[in-house]
Amino acid sequence: MPVYREKKPSNAAVALKYNPEKDYTPIVVATGQGHVAEKIINLADENGVPIFRDDSTAALLTMLSVGQGIPPELYQVVAGIYVQIMKIAKENQN
Image (cartoon, rainbow, N blue to C red; front, top):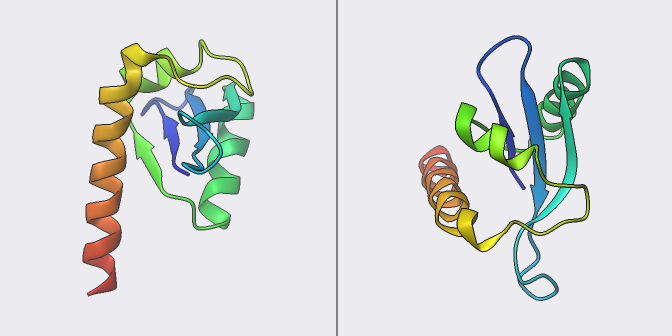
């Protein structure tokens, strides 16, 4: 699943996973700011996990706890991000 981060050097990052057969919503699997955020981003990059940069989304998602599903208020935002990631992945296959 994608990692969301702010654009600033002292950023925030959140990693989500989504298993539609098991989970009702995407689940927060990692969250952090500053040095921890950079570790999350580096691990995602090293493992080929898509990274989506968005200040406001990262700020909202860092308020969630690890293991928590995203709230209904963020469904549309996160779904829009997933659509963009899927488009990019499809373009990269061609």
